[in-house]
Image 1 (cartoon, one colour):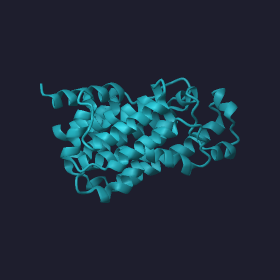
Image 2 (tube, rainbow, N blue to C red):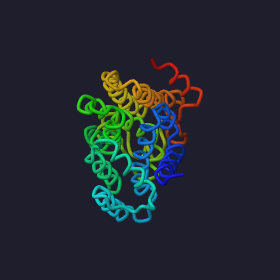
Image 3 (tube, rainbow, N blue to C red):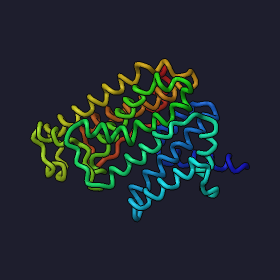
Image 4 (cartoon, rainbow, N blue to C red):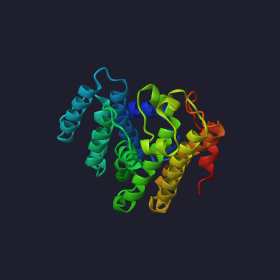
Length: 278
């Protein structure tokens, strides 16, 4: 097995382990594009793991940033298979370098005590940690059409990150993170203590639904230009969006219990969604 093949295999194992939803959707891509997506996902996962699991995340993230800038100059550790795969991707596709830098910037936002006052603050965060992923993937999924798909690619990132936020409220609380904007807490007279006490009362459900409706609006916007994707990537992109959107209904079906339950779409439901895409 060649070094590059080994690198891509490692990247595939990473996405298979950490994101069954994305893995299922993007497995529909042709071989070369699929491998490129695995490599980009590995980059994103590496940054995410540094912030969530690193012993000294701030220093480790700064070091990773230095490594990325060196990588862009062709200087990287050949024993790090992620860089080997990513180098092949950068040679094959006209990658958007700034989106990678913005992703690192977004993950750094989780290292500070950032307070999200308004929804615009949440969307700014969502752009940096999620919309950037779409921008990284556009040159792979729709080469030559990036400028036409950029805006709705950003919208899809908003939608998916809001979905993540709404699914992971309990998990984020345990990490000392809160992405519900303060103005919504004030609007519905719901307190931080209510969150700590896991009160899924009417006020909480109202907050959750207001954010969910915004996410669904961004999904709708993202679907407007889905037809511009090449045939080979249209179904995977639409599938990823629909699979993620379905998480919202899973939460609703479980009475908004985001404090003690991790919601996911079942394998059967995933297959039904994917097979229904036209």
